[in-house]
Length: 141
Image: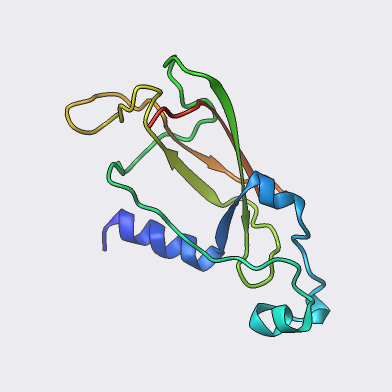
């Protein structure tokens, strides 16, 4: 099995990825109140997630672990905050790998179609709050 499939399987097992804006809602439920569909039905789980992974057309394996992924590319600065939570319990997942890649402000992807480099690509591990933070620029495409 190649690394790409393993990464997908790992992400599905550890839970869904929720944008930082969604992290402000109630993320944790008391374990004694239940989890999964029963927890949602009883109202014990305060969030409902749909685990999802978008592979996109320009995935490249073996990206670097780093916070700033711009490599000096121009564009409007953007701080991307992503929170990883368990899809059954809505509890944060610490030390999860979050892999981000996107085009630059001109619509160019690194590492594909003859473009060298690793700009706009990187991996961060989530902290104790399930948060991974990337410094990037707003994608133009």
